[in-house]
Image 1 (cartoon, one colour):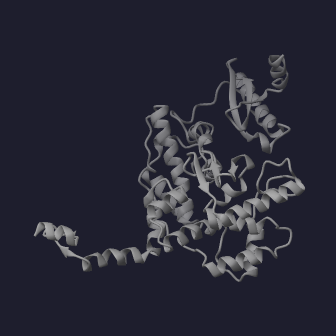
Image 2 (tube, one colour):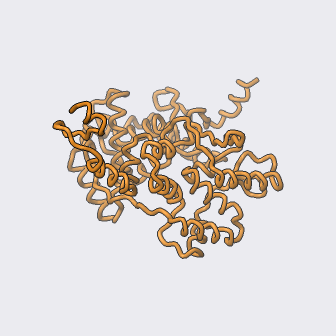
Length: 382
């Protein structure tokens, strides 16, 4: 029975694969061989398959013309930019959290490199692309992401597909400006929460802000949180590998204020949408996808400039460091993959730790090796 359904669904030549978000097409080429290829049209963007069918129809026409007139002379003797991107975007890129970002970068690269044979690419092409994007006044971070996609795709093809092609994008990365370091004072945070309570049709916003400030969770993690991952008996939130930037399982402890915000959401759910799996949902139980507009309104009401939702996480880390929490513990709470990230962003907020380290020399003598010896050790050494 399932096989009959599959055949019926594929009668139009368009089908779906469980490992791909795109519609796939099947048709017979000029040589009589059955071809299956991704249309690069996302199923969610084309539920009626209309665009996918149009692409398949074009391929059928091209196959008929080739059968009647013979194949066109091959313009390239090796893999092209399109060959690379179809293979990479429909392969390893699908497993990345940044897949949507890869698709955006591809759209910027395509007008410049469309039809280019990979073997013909040189450093001049990479420099020319960088120069053009600078003329477009695109940020260095954006250009680096675009170059990074091309670089990663070529490296993958060289390793996995054994393509013997150059990678002129290797080692080319623009210097990016120092990242933002905006965080809120206790007074600013209180003003923001108060203002959020006045934003119309955004009853969830104060709870969102509290959870961000007192757990350090990323905005996407908060909005994507399901009740099945909340354990109020242990005051923990569990995050799976697909939810975290580091791709690992993890947990987030709830302090009293964060717990109160979670309970506030539970009351809302019980009164309006008891069957909803989402912690942050509307009265119909649907997940709240974005808080940007409401958050911006709260910032205006609180007279706060240059504050974004992610700054709640940055505030959480900043408050911990200023309170004297060791950088190792802060890194663990923020779930950074490398403690050097935490150190680079937050260490400057803890000058007391350096001051304390310097005063060690006032508390004891210094040995010949340069290390300070405690009093008891000096007596034993004497």
